[in-house]
Image (cartoon, rainbow, N blue to C red; front, side, top):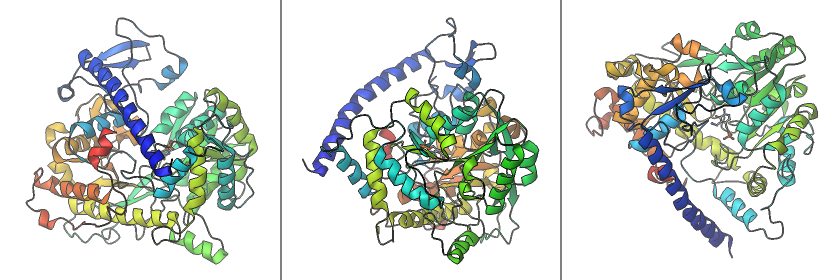
Length: 583
Ligand code: PMP
């Protein structure tokens, strides 16, 4: 059987499985619909509390969580009823009230219920590059090697060898494939296992705020206490904003780490600092100076303190720091991801760092779910010890496919010297499409000529005219899915845009601690993804442009909308929104 016909065969098989899955899903949905109640566990009393429907919630037909989870943790309704309290384990208790609907389940639901251009969840809406799909098919039909059985728990040999080769270049030291790498189910599990092996109850873990929301509950699950260090938002002056719209009522800005804030947060209990660069949600790339201040903090905190560096977006440094790129060429050093600073390569930091990444963002294959940890044997071997009690191994066939994909990604691709160069260029173009659209609609965005950026999100600042367009009754209305039960400005705006304006973005509240939310730190921002086909971004641009005009699906005024047409969508193998929503 040829690889192509095999792929067809595999896809047809999945289609049949899909029918069964969707049948099961429907019946779960019906069960939820019948209950017409949302349940939340109050673990302070270990008792079930019923959250009655709010006026907003009535629109939900009583469904708390019917959407597939597309990004981050997902809660489902518990099986017990208020009359039959469940006995819960330590992990659920540690999560506290964070066991109800999440931003991801709520906005996943909205994306299914309303026809929207979805700039919400962080997954590309196109197929992985052909060489990656081919690698998967080749791996699947390789009868001689048959990667369909268990592989080495700590990581499939072909994959850890390929990763060791790359990280030996990234970190400029020889990496031992068997002792210094652990393969996990996505970067999420790499983070989870790192925290589980490091943290004891009472330990503190520093998170820079805003943060990728997964970190908070993972720290709590490990028995640790999150300690938040705020990044400071510094708005541009009007000249630095590079805004050609003279009537603008909002400017973008930069998020910076003030080292004094980090120093204040240190204590003898500081067990770990989580560094995410490029950063979700802001797109920030931490500067070398900021990273050096983190290295100083690790030393100051004491020998117990290590850094977990989450670099899942390292190949998407679309606005690399200029001085880093220049320094590299001055030093005669060629980085595999130009502009990305490997924290573990700073003096003295290899011994104190677990470097975490995954393949999902790089190869537009977030469902492959292969991630890894790289670090010194002392930090990696506890993860090796824990792995067999979590699962015997991550999927062998996907690990083998990834090893083959890595070998092919260095080759020239679509007129670029490598797939990585293509990826960066393609995201730079998409970023500009979205950032121009946001600016034209009345949001403040980073000026990427002066502010480095990476990843595939823009943390857009809500301008006054946008805030004024939001119907007043929506602001601060009750909402069970919103943190604190209240839809503050960012949440209300995103919900309104999804329900009434045809575009879906993610509010910023989930990326802040409840204390900072209460202070209003998140009110001004929303997270907007540009890992979407040009068609989706164009559609969103049009919808965004109409916000202030109070019109839905209007063609009036659209002649003033930024021209965002593109002929590249076919070339990038764009798949339609309808298709992705039914998957
Ligand atoms: N870290 C960050 C910063 C992320 O944005 C994500 C995905 N949204 C992850 C980790 C999780 O990656 P994975 O899908 O490989 O588990």
